Each structure stands twice: as structure tokens, then as C-alpha cells.
Image (cartoon, rainbow, N blue to C red; front, side, top):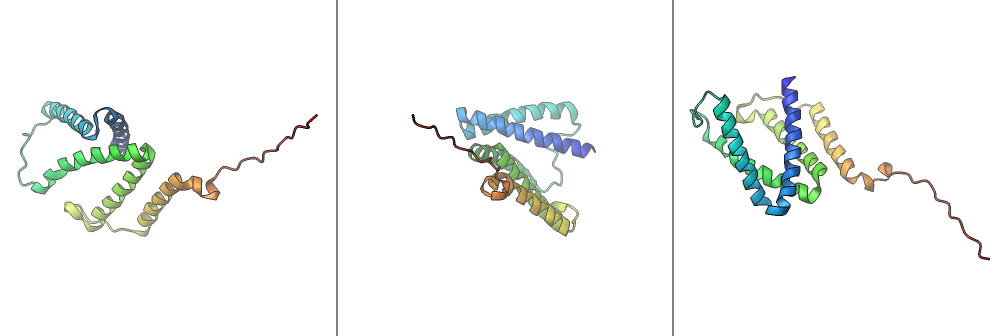
Length: 163
């Protein structure tokens, strides 16, 4: 249950942060916003780290050093989401982001990448992912599909008699 709670909070924070970032980027640019956001994040995370952790900051031990590249992923994530939102809008950007996250997570699960236990890709996962993609298409393109268009009541025209 606590995992679901943290996942919901993460979704709310990601969406809110990127909406704020997109607004900030109109004044200081995308890379300026990325720099400020991640700089403030570094400051906040250092404060929390030194307040609650009991391990040294750079105690990597036998960690595969390739995982350190995730910081570059973070910079790219902030920039790409911000640009996507400014072009597509928040709802569509988050929807596409969610599908791509789920698709990649399914690949990682299925093949047991990055030392995760392999979990078979089943038909119900394929159907669920397909429904999610279909839902996004309806969400974005529904106004072009006759079935999803609002039915307008026929308008009667009144003609004035000329006197």
C-alpha cells in the first residue's frame, strides 16, 4: 500500500513540477530552467541526505559505474518534459510519457535487465498496454472520430418576413 501511495505522490509531483518548469522556461529559457530546477533539487537533496542518511555520500562500493549516468537522464528528463509540455500541452505529454515508461519497464521486467528478476510478458499486459495507447489516441484524436463527436441538436432557422 505504501508503494502505491509513493507512486501516486510521484505522479502528482512530476506533473506539477513540469507544469511549473514549462511556465518558468517562458521567462528564462529551457536550459536556464533546467539548471535552476536541478540546482535547487541538489540543494534540497543534500540537506535531506545529511539529515537522514547514515552512509557517506560517495560510498559507491561495488556499484556498476554505468548507473551514475542517471544524473544525465534527470537533466534530459526535465528538459524533454518541459519542451513536450510547451508543444503538446500537459495532458498529452504526460500520457505519452506514461506509455513510454510502462513500455520500457515491461522490457526491463520481461528480460530481467539491470539485475531485476525476469517477469514474463503476458497477453493481459499486452492488452493493457494496447488499451492505454488506444485511450491516448482517443483522448487526443477523439474529436476527429465521428463516434466520439458531440451530437449537436438541429438548429431551426427562423426567417423574418419582409414587410
